[in-house]
Length: 383
Length: 76
Image 1 (cartoon, rainbow over the protein chains, first blue to last red):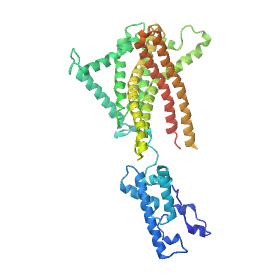
Image 2 (tube, each protein chain N blue to C red):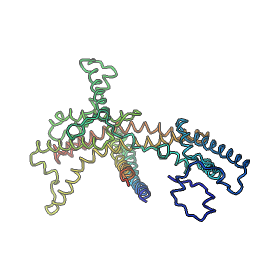
Image 3 (tube, chains in turn blue, purple):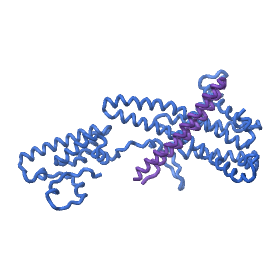
Image 4 (spheres, chains in turn yellow, brown):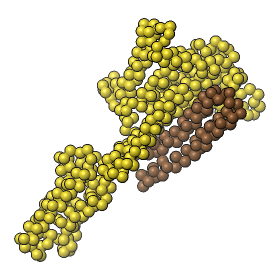
């Protein structure tokens, strides 16, 4: 990033044309006499050298203030790289002015970061969603690594299983439940409600059959989504791949259930009763597209909620952190604003995490109802 | 050039939030209307309203997701 070109009197005095590259790479120390070749008395040269040393020290100080959280060695190397041990007063003063006036936004500082090996940009809010292989594994050409999503899925699973284990017959199982047992009972009781409401339909025996499957889906995302709110943890459901895998497998299962229960009559879901025949081809298409889009939409809904919420919390906490680092009393007071917004966002985020588990469960119930009962159950839903 | 176009695209993607705002406002205004007409149903209606709110909010997040995709997916 060649931004600063040194001021060179030789170039002004001579007629030779210099290539651009030669200026920028030319950071080697030169004798002070090049600054003023005509009047090169010893005393003047001495004064100029002292001035240059002082300017270099000040550049180093300013950089030390600007580079937060960096070791002194790094600041020193960066400062040396920026001023290049130059003795040119004009160049050094120009650098110092730029650093003093523009601060973090200055070109010299950008160059510093470039030299220190880090871009001056704010870290991406999407950084937290990176999938890192913890135990790399390859089976043939397949990539089977144990990654951080796998780890956090296992954590969620073990949490749920432990919780359920300790309150059921082996652990607790009291007739008068304690707090933990009533929590698990609450979660367990919560699921049959929407299942009965949505899937019950005209044939009453459906509900018990699918209740465990829906219960598992609900419990898993109910524990998995809020777990992502723990700082430095990983949100498994913020990945398109995982939510889409879930929703597609559920969609395929629902289609199979529909064909199993209704046979080829299942295809009649794409045509509401009493439609005039000329309209039928269009209506089949119009019903088929949303039906297939459900597989996508229930995955995307969960993923987008998780990802967007977590990114916005991250962006706002980045604001708070930047303001905290500004070393200025005014900004320090102003910092409370973003901080409180972050705190206030955490609450709705937890709410979204839990309500998305609920919403995805309900939408699965609705899809399942469409598959099992076809078009006959509208009366039951809205009673 | 591409950077600028990406920023414009991401900004334009957030226009969709207007629709989501109308939708969320509609959900809660309907809730207030309904509760004012029949206060005894308040609890049940609130559950439905929260469900509708979550579904509407998800649509808003699709727009946000598009903005993120536009900003981060296309590389030079």
